[in-house]
Image 1 (tube, rainbow, N blue to C red):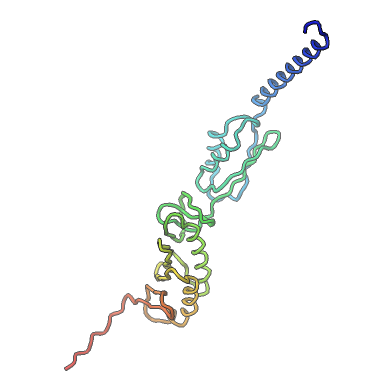
Image 2 (image 1 turned 90 degrees about the vertical axis):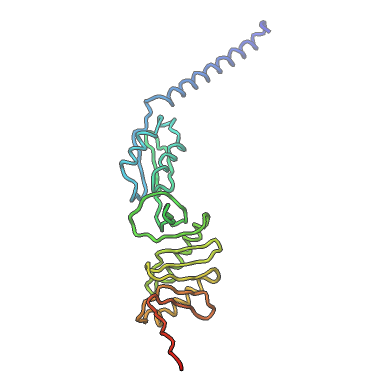
Length: 241
């Protein structure tokens, strides 16, 4: 083998090429990990109403590790998504030294009981809010149905200027609404939209013109609804004989 110059030349070229590749890899590794390529600019975009500059700076100082090339984008995204009110984040590199962070906040639709908030997508999230939000309650897993139901009932009740302030959905899928923290509508399980529509049509000529307070309406009747008058005192029966 050693007396074959062509083979030895080929082997020498192969070893030389391999050495060059190792050298290039080493140079690239050093360049990628070199502090000569830091992330100098971090651009945060999005309509942010609840996320503060201090919260963003905290994440940038404590969670972002590495150079422009070695920074883990998934970990960076997850670090920003841990902030309250953050729904989702996308992170991109922009040569030569910029990181672009696009953030989307939750938009609070209602309170989920007394434990968390519900956004407009019907997703639960943990955050603090002083806004006068309606309260939705139901079994776990019914968040999207409750959010959609609340929006639908709110639109239906708009013509009579009543607002749902509390909405319940039972395990049997029966609806109950509290309007303006005063009037409770027992809607039930079947034909909920139709029952509320009938109530809205009847309200202006019935409850709206009554001189007495009504705090409860049961819509679960095929041809009408029943009301409860909290201050109603039934007349005493007349004595006979």
